[in-house]
Image (cartoon, rainbow, N blue to C red):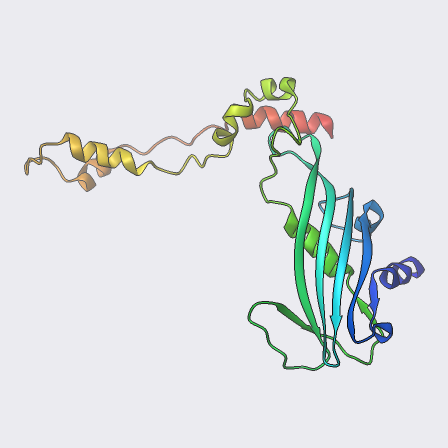
Length: 219
């Protein structure tokens, strides 16, 4: 409990001591920071949050500039790499309810409280700075060729590994229409589709099976 209080105080703004006007502050985001978030998918990193704050009598306007890196696993080979972060976010902390802004997120905070915790905001900003699909460019991370060989993939086949097999190519339908002479005696496309027998369930792609086996061995 004591550590949690120290952590909260470390990642808080002392609003009572902030003077009206512009000022700056910095906060470190590293492995010790992520330990306080039990279900964080990110465990390691070295990010500095630079805060530019403008305080008035009614609100505190804060711009968060996060720069550094976090360690994530490549979605292609499952190996860790340093994902760079260089993003800016902005929040207006209003001391009075009712303040609205269509372009910036507004959060209400009680002006009586001297400490304004920002650890959750910092955590959320890091998470949204990492793309859902984590495949780094070659200058940042190169997949191990032995792993790619195991899953029968290479750098150029990256898009094929993430294609949706259920997606249909609409051009195929256009080609079929262009090849027909427009004879009214031909059965309607709906009839042709109805006569096609139902496909058997598809087997699991062997590349994914190999990758799962490799990840089980690594774990």
